[in-house]
Image (cartoon, rainbow, N blue to C red):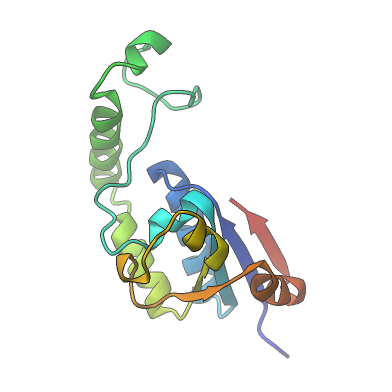
Length: 156
């Protein structure tokens, strides 16, 4: 029997949206599934060599639990994004949640295939040297072939 396949599309480059594709991909790979993540638009940020600049935004994120209720006007103030990011990273660390870097490394070690959307790379004038080495480049048609054969396909 052939291994199950999972196709993921990562479109967001914020801290809170970076975790789901890496968690799902690493879990599926640990279960013996063949996994591909197609990174497009802002999801390309997750392929940069350093993930240190990945932030979370409290603005327009009403479900985000905050230690104290904050009006939207306060969330817009300079420095709030950095503060929310620091708070989230500290909470994750205190709860033993793997860092984004660790999760990405686990995916790569587990042979999860990372595909960067060539059209988006060209659109935003990125250089391939800005990204980690373990990336393939292809268009939607490249990804659709795998997605069409997959058992699970998720858009994140």
